[in-house]
Length: 269
Ligand code: ZN
Image (cartoon, protein in one colour):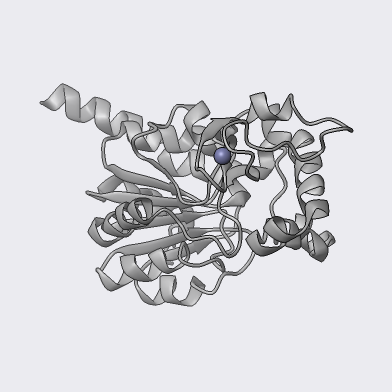
């Protein structure tokens, strides 16, 4: 009888053999750190579809009540106390193995950098909640400073330079992505031979389309996500795989052999 290697085992060997790896992460990698995702079974928008309105730029600009609610939710955001988890740390190990060309993330929580991933490799497509940007003059300030200004009498503090509307330095629906970042992410997807998409529903563009860019360039696509994504079939058809296991368990397993590999390469060299 033929023994079939487990999917995770096959993916681990692909990762060990890949020359250039690009990673895309979504909210699913941070749920173990206590930051809820958006579209999962317990997701913010699954439970409260109206909450999605808080992240539309048109509503934010037009409606002071939307801004007041946004500031209140920023004050209560779990990112301020969250710590990186085993999934984030596994991607640091992957970077140390020397083949990671980009860690593209849809997350705004900076947990990758806090886990130890290089800020230079971490492409925050949707911005960061740790910074505030003025929508009029573009001035950026630390979120912690601006949260200190939020109070019952000042529920929506204006820019201290120009009086304009302030918002977290995140990309809301209706706002363009930073072109330079998207260009770097696209180049990484087009130049890798293995593209690993972790914890993303792959339904938000243009982030999800990076999977298509990688496939078109001949890369193997590996998806790690609890729920089905629109790219699952393409991943399989392109010689890749889909893993449904919990991210915090499967990512460490996928990279467990890499330290030995690089140690072995060092000894041989
Ligand atoms: Zn301003």
